[in-house]
Image (cartoon, chains in turn orange, brown, cyan, yellow):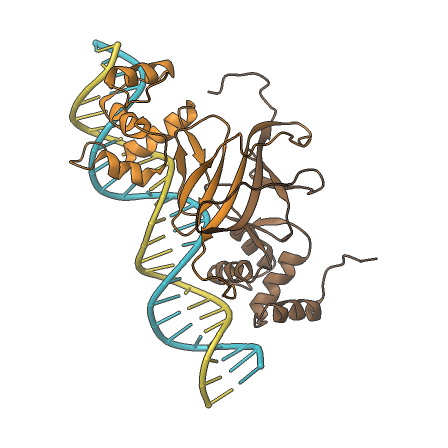
Length: 147
Length: 147
DNA sequence: GTAGTTGCAAAGTGTTTGCAGGCAG
DNA sequence: CTGCCTGCAAACACTTTGCAACTAC
């Protein structure tokens, strides 16, 4: 049985080392906040999380670190919104609901929805990934015209 | 048999009127360039297309008009790239390849790939749309490390 | 000790907005 | 004529970058 507890500092250091990332203080703080639970966060949300009590990490470092983590495969970029990139701590194949009102992502379990066939790719290209996004919104106004 | 010729000015005026869009000169120029063929363009590309010979439409008007067209259902926004929004002149259900190197979209025909089941939506939400994006890249460096 | 990292603020990019003048109906 | 549209430039939000100081090993 796997206890999904918050990883301690040593776990986080090991995680970063495994990905060839030098574990600096700021990266540990970021990783700790990020991997505490499975989530979808924007850079700015993460910046707020990390600096909740007092400023610990600068904005630039959050951006740089997220890019680094994404490059190393620790998080996955999710591009669904025109205004910001989300980073998904779950890197295995799965898809998303995207609520356009609250601007939040929700996982769709692979058992519930997955891609079982990808059509032949264009000549000379290789696949990087497949993503399905189900765009949803709050059912407030029941049947009004679409403005 | 449908001849898919470039629509003339009268066709375009009719098209806009059908969508409750007042057909101004600039909107006609934009619509003409946009609907001349089926394509995926960014606002900036469209701005260039429209002003190829001489400046005819301002940047703000291109952005405003694209937003208006999207709102009225004449084009569809495709969000796949962190840097720009693409507008797809094909509004019926279909999906895309996205080449991350050239930053270009290619249609996937619905007969080849489509969503035949959407899982139950979160409580109190309704579906806006579903999109599949197959991210691809040029197969240049055969098997190098991911840098 | 050395290379790599951080922080700051400034630059950069795509997009939106406010307002005066212009055009459609 | 009246209201909506256009253009310009400035504002905006998110992200990246340059450089000096600092930290990991």
